Image (cartoon, rainbow, N blue to C red; front, side, top):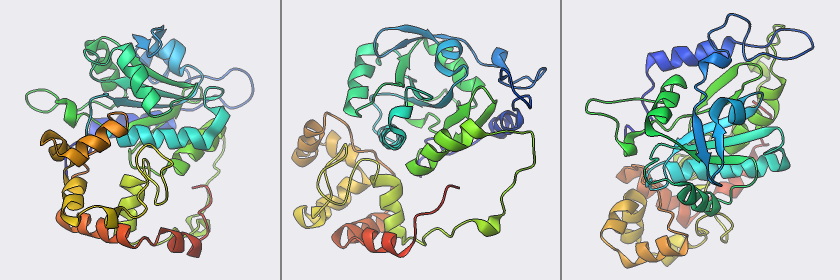
Length: 327
């Protein structure tokens, strides 16, 4: 598996735990980012200038997160790894939340490649994912963005410097008004992310021990390995029916494509594009030059996924188990 966004330094985790316990002052009135004296107040977040996809200059703290419930991730538009899938996942979160995005919930995607990701490039990228109002794509000075990522616990530098295709892909969801922040995975279920942003974070309080019992938690369906791969890797961009997402619908794809070609495509789509494979190039052009991510699947995972696409059981498994309640 790639190191792309997998490692989690202990100092990052300590930062997240400290942010999680910071909360509002009990009672009515105005809220704080954290209790007085806490290091996680407004002074902690770099108020760096950024330029949005619309060419507007904004400040990170003042304009993008202050008093807001937000999801913050870092991407770059030329990414052929996890970034497209993460952005597609946030698109599904946007769809789940509907008109609340831009009203009381906000999404922020910041480029780690500001030299190439101009406002125009970000605007085109946002359009490919059908980003709506309330979803800001931004760029800025490279050193400012590095400092911001370090402060947010989303920067990891290996020996010799960080490479773009190894940048940290975990992202944050949080409520600046209560001081509660959580790190999430790009493979998270979008319904869970929507619940966190729409219900859990806005209503979070620290003025009483309100703990639910694990005994009351509903049992999640026990998914086969192949279906789990499909849900966590493919579902953000594809459906098992006709085309209704960012990428092609997968109905009949195992019968339509040569099996050996499909295995190569699922295992290393970036390699097929580099080799100028005609089918890969046609798909790349048809779907607005969005690359198929390389998920570093091994041979067994590829075979399992092809078997699932040949005879999907998603509907039958989903019908056997009731949808889980809010976590």
